[in-house]
Length: 219
Ligand code: GAR
Image (tube, rainbow, N blue to C red; front, top):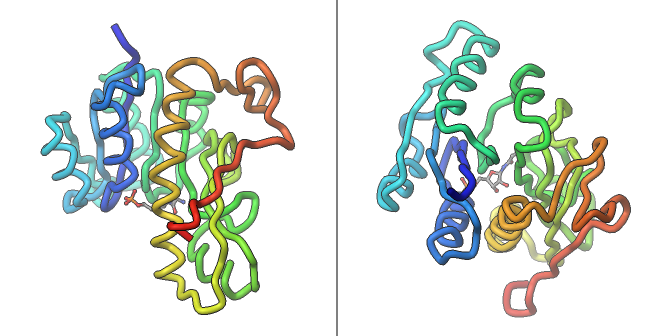
C-alpha cells in the first residue's frame, strides 16, 4: 500500500492541482487520501472533487479558539493516517501542538526565496526592495511562521516593469514545478528532516538547497 497524503488548502488550490496531476501521472509513490479546506468556498474543493478525491471542510469561523480548531483538524487529518501533510495555500497560523504532531512530515510552499519575506505580500516587498530575483520555497513546517528548513527553491528574475500580480503569476508557475518534486522526494524517502536539518539521500542540504531557475520562456 502506497503512502497516504493529506492536503490542506484555503483557496484556489492550483498547487494542489499540480500535485494531483503528478500523482495521477504515476510519478509520486503515494495517494491523496483527503483534501481539507478551512474555507467552505475554496475553489480547490471543486478541483479535488473533479479529480475524485475525498474532501472535507472544517470552517475555522465555527470554532471558539485557534487551539480548538487545530485539535479538531488533527482529528480529521489523523482519520487518514497521513505519511505526509501538505499545506498548499493553507492560510492559517498553526498552534505549536499542531506543528509538533506532524513534525518532519508536514511541508509548506511559500512564495519567496526564504528566509526573505516571511508572511504576506511577498511579491510587492521583493519589488519594493529592488530585488533582482524572487521565487518560491518548499520547507518543513516548524513553529516559526514560514521559517522552517527549506529543501527546494525556484527563482525568477524580477523585471523593471513588474507589478506584484505579474511577478506572482510567474512565481506561481515555478511553484507548480517545485512542489510536486518536493512531494515526490519526500514520498520516496529521499528527503528527510534530521535534527532539524533537511537531508537529501542522506546528505545535509544546509547551505546547498537545490534551486530551479525559470526557463527563458517563463521569465
Ligand atoms: C501560493 O502562491 C502559495 O505559495 C501561497 O498561497 C498561494 C496559494 O495558491 N502560500 C502562502 O503564502 C503561505 N504562506 P494556490 O491555492 O493556487 O495553490
